[in-house]
Length: 190
Image 1: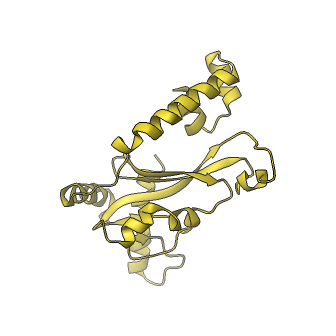
Image 2: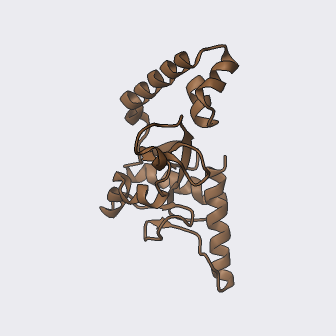
Image 3: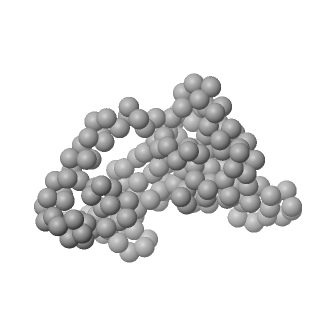
């Protein structure tokens, strides 16, 4: 729980340690052990749906939210706070909100199951770049999945990654945006 508190609530290790009566080095060791366990066993549990049947179930779950068809994942980046790094590259870890972080890309399904994760980019890296250099994009390019992802306007619109329209010109486009945002935010905002 300590590792999840540090990562999920973006608490620094000192604060999480104080809450649990542990010194920061102990919290650091706990976070490292949890991270190694996730790296070692994560792919057993974190994976995109490969069978057509599993993809169909996920698409039904997403469609049930706001009648948006063909969605197999919602994608976003989240900033995991880290301590200030030293050296010449430190400024690259400062994100647009002004704190040191890693920008972690997550794809999840309608049941909030994490389906893909990329956790190796500095905080200043834009979500779109992370996606463009990810294996999940490559897999969509190869047409491994029938469905599409829903992302925010920071991503580039493609045939497999739908984003909201920046300007709507008619009622149909407005309905698209409402369905897109409601479907994606139901998952991402939870």
